[in-house]
Image (cartoon, rainbow, N blue to C red; front, top):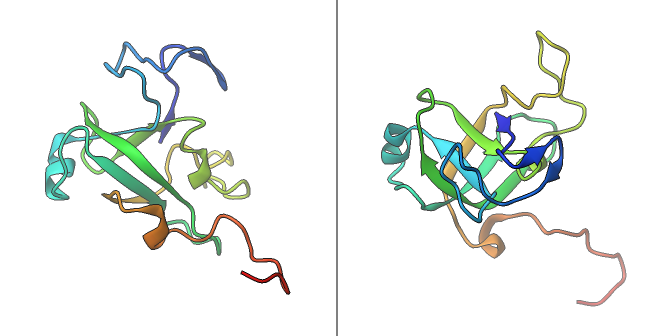
Length: 131
């Protein structure tokens, strides 16, 4: 699910701190249950990559988020909006509410890897342009 921080009003972010969740100077954060972190061989503060499991024909991944153990249901994660919005396709809606899938999107969490090793290119190559 995507969430807002303490010093945030809608999409306007006033600070990178969130006193409610004890986060300072970072908004690329993924909140997880401590047991879920341990099950993946991760610890509090480790860098992770997040990939959506919604199949809309596009790879949707955000990289280099800091994992933070918190009091959240096992099997659930939360990240700040708009930082995690790259995971969400504009045309994918929740079945019961007909709103964008911000609160119930399945994701895969893995240890952070170098972007060059696994992410798709940020741009499409231009035909006929030499490398």
